Image (cartoon, rainbow, N blue to C red; front, side):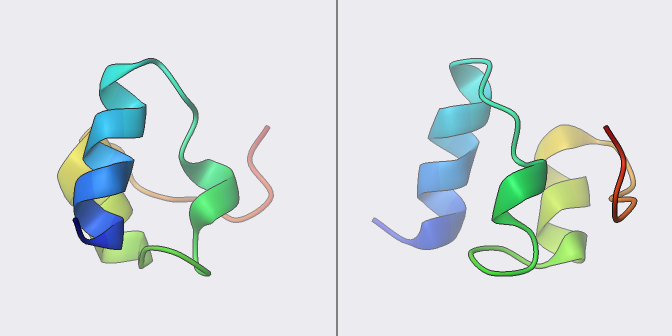
Length: 43
């Protein structure tokens, strides 16, 4: 399972993916998974 796949799973569980950017997934991948733009420092 890739980091991307894991994050898709985490998101399906309601886990916030913001802390995983940019270490585990890229901002582009974050947007693909969540449908939201990644904004650094967003609460």
